[in-house]
Structures are given as C-alpha cells and as structure tokens.
Image 1: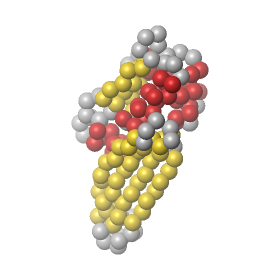
Image 2: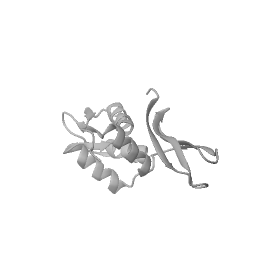
Image 3: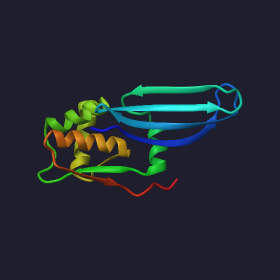
Length: 144
C-alpha cells in the first residue's frame, strides 16, 4: 500500500508563552500501518515541536481532519463481513478489544464503518486483502 497522508492546519495557544502557534495535524499510512504527527511552531517564543507516532491518531487530530475533510466510510459488498478476518483487521489497525472490533464489524455490515479517509483507506485495503468485498466513499462534510 502506498503512503497515504491527510493533514489539517490549525492554530492554538503556546503552552509555554501563551502566544499564537501555527501547526499541522497529520494522519498517515506508511508501510501498511497507521501513524500520526503533530508539527507546530510558536510565533512568540520560537519553540518548534514535531511529535511523530505510530498507531491510531488521538481524537483531537482525528477531529481536525474530519472537520477539514469530512468523514469517509467503508461498507461490505456481496455476502457481508463475518468472522475472524474482519475482527482481525480492526484489532490490528486500531488495537481494539474484541468487543470494539465486533461493534465495528456490525457497523460495517449495516450502516458502514466511518472514520477519517486515511483510516478508511487502510481498513478497506486490509479487508480486501483478506478476501472481503468492500465499497468506500466520503460522507458529506460535517458542519461545525
């Protein structure tokens, strides 16, 4: 799977000097795994930070991306998604419990599972690799 990236610019208050900061919240797929970054710099004290992590992005980063781009969704086609293959995908991608993975699988079979475009791209790719037929797309942009 290719490198997939989505980023949203943001402004916040510096935790050191309380001046305005400008930054980027980034979610990406690299080498078949989710990752996220938070890059910012302060206009007042000049502090810059790059926080690079592997795994699912925190809710504030996900929220910024969804606010900027809207939600995406993935649904199963054909016979539906049942069994361990689907649970394994959600557990591998997000590190979820079996119960949380079952909830996501239920959504996948009914209304579709929703997330950022990056998350949906990875889930759809891994489901297809495991033999599950999927459809994906973007939802309407959420109004703030």
